[in-house]
Image (tube, rainbow, N blue to C red; front, top):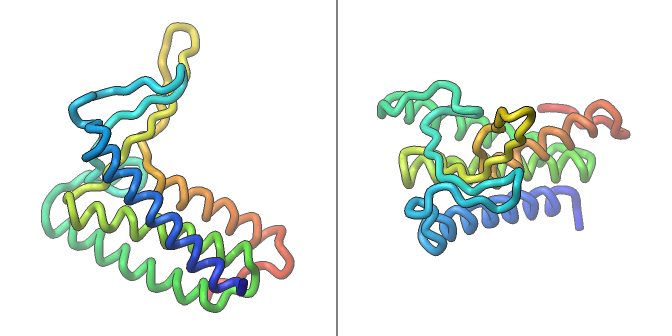
Length: 164
């Protein structure tokens, strides 16, 4: 399999897994009705609608703000796709595919619901205090894994991936 095909495959798998998990949690499992679902002592399922960007920044549900976020997302996906097509390493290409698949998955949410569907919550209790991580989804996990792999390939890979 060529690096480009591997990158496209990683984008498609990320997108399908993300959208399938969200559709199942919303419509099959009924997460909105169930509220917080404790899965393990450190992991819960909880429905959160993110109208902002990463980590809930820039929370604004105005139509102009949502359109601006979508325009930035489309431009970023196009730039990442060009970079992926030019990438010389399998790791960088797969990493870019993960990022693209995650970005498209969250973009579909924004178009369909006006917000991104987040549902995964990791937390830890220390000394009677509970510390929560941000609520996220599989698209976010794909983006984070893609960025980590891209950084690894850029700094330690041979040859290092080059942006367009």
